Amino acid sequence: MRIALKSMAAFLALRGGTAAFTATRSFGVRSLVRAPTARFMSSDSGPMPHDDDKMPFYALGVNLARQVGGQTSFNTLLEDEELDLLLEGFSDSMKGTSIQSDQVVLATYGPALNKILQDRTERIVDRVKADGEKFIENFLDCNDDAVKTDSGMVYCEMTEGDGKQPDTSNTVEVHYHGTLTDGTVFDSSVDRGQTISFPLSGVIKGWQEGLAMMKEGGKATLVIPSDLAYGDAGSPGGIPPGATLKFEVELFKVS
Image: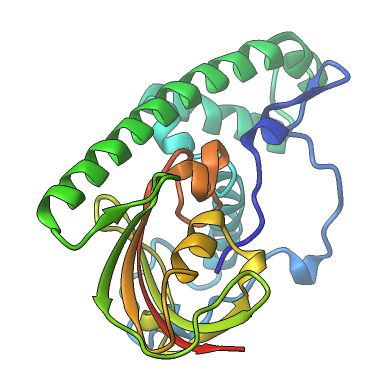
């Protein structure tokens, strides 16, 4: 279950006239690329774009792209031509072939870049929030047992529990399956095949409210608007800024 939030504002901030894309800490070689988990590995993963002797360096590029993309979804913020310019700037800087120094480029155009990304992000967030509101309306229309609480969260009981009811002082053991409003799965203990336990006080507000309405042995669907989830920042790893989230939650134990 994701708990920490990372604000895009930190990524877009300017420091000393230089855009904050400059690395602020060094990485040891051993920690630069994380090995994939077993569920993403396969003995028959299909063809690769290069020979085995070249693929480690290609993998480095993939890793850098994932690190940057985990903070800002450039593929949704930039047009294809703009992405090409991004890659050109990256290549020129890495190879040292630019006709202008990196510091001058960043000091001159960093503020304009930040404003472009900020404006586009705000427009996307507004659209995502509007889509979430429509999803909640449709969900309520299609589920007679669903109730919308004063906070805006939607609770729909699937199986009634008969055990202990938690509050934020408790630790809970659950199974959950989390999706975006378009059905994209962003996190699922069900898919991993292992329940998870955590203090209820340490998760998003929508979970705190929704789980407090359940009892041990129960199962429910929670539809959580962004202000009770990850807000305008979203969460790296699949939750866009402003996203409304849908969870199917089964409560096993309260302690």
